Image (tube, rainbow, N blue to C red; front, side):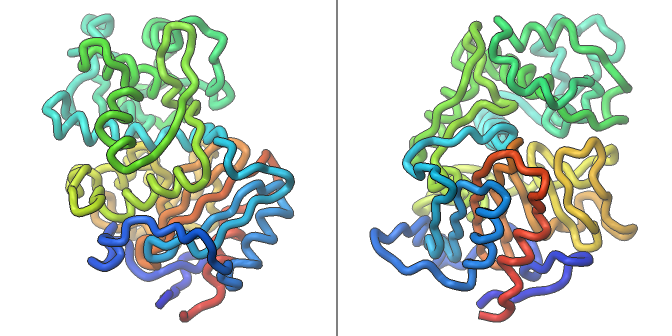
Length: 352
């Protein structure tokens, strides 16, 4: 049954947000029946998505694919660029690395990226700062596709300016994630972060994915992953299930919870994930500082109602824990697209 409440002027979603689902759903994992009839309650959302340059719209409810449509000439078998939707994989990489004893969120990056050891400000940047985009490193979001640069990691380590002391500002851009990729390469003695993620997580859950790399071989963790819609939903289902898959706890749920806590610099961005809270108002990802929730939201205490991986061109992976929903939307850039409008159409059917 889908339960609903109002979480702002126009967005209605399920109650609560603990990242957990029923035992029956956890056992089912993802169920993709060969033939099924789309649940008509999602027709309005799919039609809206298509009208604003949508290319794919999928809904998984209780782990089962209940709606799937490909639009505007897009071939659903073709992997799609996630753009900055790729960033959410770095949360999983960090959780795995903590589980494997490779790092902690609050260790200094300069302990591994030793080029920063003698810099009075950069030496204070932590792994948490990188993943929450609060390192103080300033780069414009238009630089996510610097694939022609020979070595993005070295460029950002050595050349990116510090716009504020670590922890005091939120700056959206690729620098932090390229540096995280290099940090992981050094921690892994040469294995790169995407190979590590594939070996430790993607292959065990049957998820096929590719990623762009620069000429130095650095994986484009800020925005280079290519997945089909079903595969991106598979990752979303893993997150919804608190890292559990086929009875095996692949990601520690306590560590994962760190990914869904904002920062003092930006309460609506956790570690790689956008967060939507009741009372937030308009939901505009990628703004330097999107609308912050009303007073009363406490970091580490209040739970977001919607968790989002978002990429340029309006690529979206929505996770709505209280309703056991995982939603994937692919598209092309369209200024008329609205997250609030899409989600409200999904949830406006009320009780089921």
